[in-house]
Image (cartoon, rainbow, N blue to C red; front, side, top):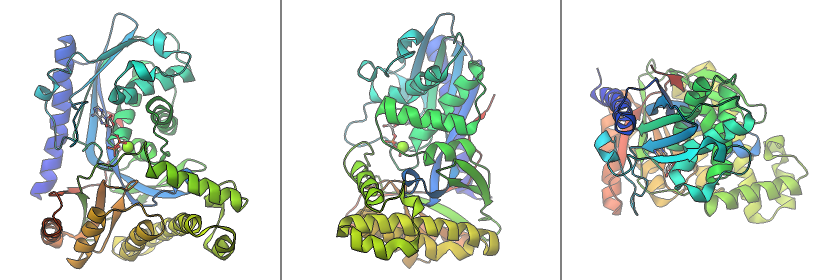
Length: 420
Ligand code: ADP
Ligand code: MG
């Protein structure tokens, strides 16, 4: 047995314990139910989701847990072990219930104040807009006679590391409220609810990939998602059978989705699609790039080229996984990174160092994952070389004067579910 694998399992159990303990602080009682949803890593397909394109993420074995108790009144309260005011550096590692002191009271609001109208963003701290935004989006979709709830949240998904702790908190909350409010909504519908919360309650203009991955994840598989039809198809990864492991390298550089670069890249994509007369960049193929080069300014062209070639790389990765298995996809992962670095310009020195050091130490493939500007990289490695790759990356970071990265194995895991 692999010791690192056990760590992840234990950490997830700790999050469940922490959520129960926090609920006990809030209510003095046991939960009526416990739900959880995972973070995700994206194998390939970056910045393609909001262009109606293709993505291939998988849910990871790190989860956000929601311990829930129904209330007598019509109010909703959320509390989290995550420190909502982490200061300039974000917290790391699993959190226990003792970290909840001070936030134990949670954030409480009348359901009536969440129903019918805009999300009351100014009335709640930013973190609470994720779970309360989910409640708001569900209420907007129509709930008969909703009961009040207390929701205690704990997580071992690193926050702000590009592994979508945001989709995890949305998925855990949405799954819990669906069951407690007896709503007839499937996983894709809940993914849409999560995205609506993130876009309109939090105000972060993200695509649908993260929520789909967290809701639909499947053990040992990635989910091939067509972000136009929202159809999700599991694709077997077979890492273990091929003797491979997937490392996440958390650069510990905080990324900020709602600001700056992300919005700018989306705008460039919309500009490119409009200039080329298509609904979304998904409607272009690599054969259209010559025309794009003539019509677009240099920067917009490179943004478009990334998206168009990345869509093709996702399709190629799915085909290679099915035909030849995971050892065959390394070059596509690297090509994705190069395109994100040079054409889309969303990498950073830490991510480039992680990828270069991993490849130099023998990784089959490596790339940044998530939106970029920090966050995490992934490296697909031979199991027996995992430690050597980790050490090489850590050494490269030290040599470059970067903060020590967090490096851990992730396993493709099941999506959102009720745990008890
Ligand atoms: P990522 O999704 O890559 O982790 P985001 O910036 O999209 O980063 O989402 C992180 C934000 O989501 C946090 O700053 C916090 O507001 C909220 N969040 C995520 N997980 C939790 C949690 N367990 N408790 C409270 N807030 C959380
Ligand atoms: Mg996020």
